[in-house]
Length: 177
Image (cartoon, rainbow, N blue to C red; front, side, top):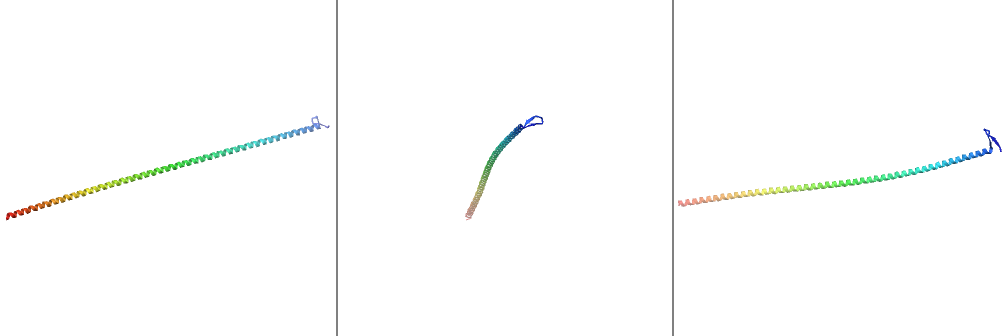
């Protein structure tokens, strides 16, 4: 077996050096395997973290999706509420319109009643004028009748006067005879 002298003067057998190199290579391979295992482990953990992040992103997307859906539902509900409010407002407007129409009809009925009362007052005034005309006419007729009566009385008086004159002439004629 050959023998070598190291720089320090210590003798190292050539086979021992080879074994040492082999052990070193083995340790290096072991370290390489360890680094490889660690690398694979890191990659595995990284992939796992990435999958977890992806799951988290998916959960986040899902939450956002649900939130958007809830928001859309809330918006639809608000829209339905606005529509109900618009319908209530339309109903109130129809009610106000009905009330306005009813008030207008009532005013028209009142105006018609007033016109009827006015017509009745006019008829009453006309009847009153008619009564007054009749009364004046009857009064004129009574006056004419009184006038005719006075005329008859005057005629009777003239007749009596003529009769007295006739008797007077008759008496004078007898006396002369």
